[in-house]
Image (cartoon, rainbow, N blue to C red; front, side, top):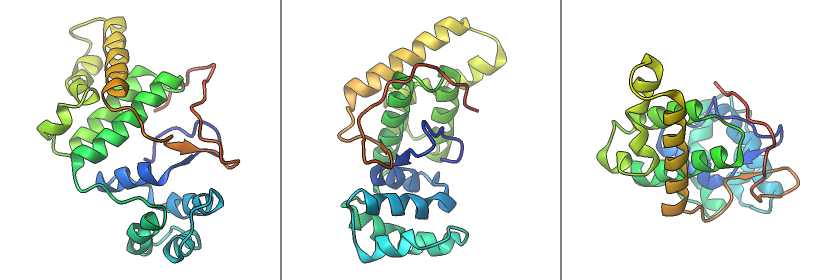
Length: 191
């Protein structure tokens, strides 16, 4: 997504995460060719992936025309349902929070954005992070629970998301091909 943090300058979302963002209409199209080039370096290959990696990203139609086939070259399909895509995106958000680079307020904003993209579908709200849908109003309006209580609820929901839907693979890689979850020493405010 456009406002998702780059944990390190070279971090690249995996094809699985980009596929989920695509279903949710959240993919920053201009970045996809660069990511495709990294996926080639990571060992994926195929004609459509090579074509995608060679595009500039300025023509969104051109990128979208080859994206599905390029993801297939990476043994990844675009999720058929908003729920499956949101689950992948929510699991990634939970991991971002657990690894430390983002604050709870940012998580709530991204959850609300994803829920809005799905029309606040009940099956998405039923996911552990989806249950935070009402916090965006409470947080921003200054009524209700205290900020520490709201932060605790987000931390709990992130833990529940990871427990209920453990990631099957890392959702970020680095140019050197490492994909292990990294611990970060500082939390960043990401808007």
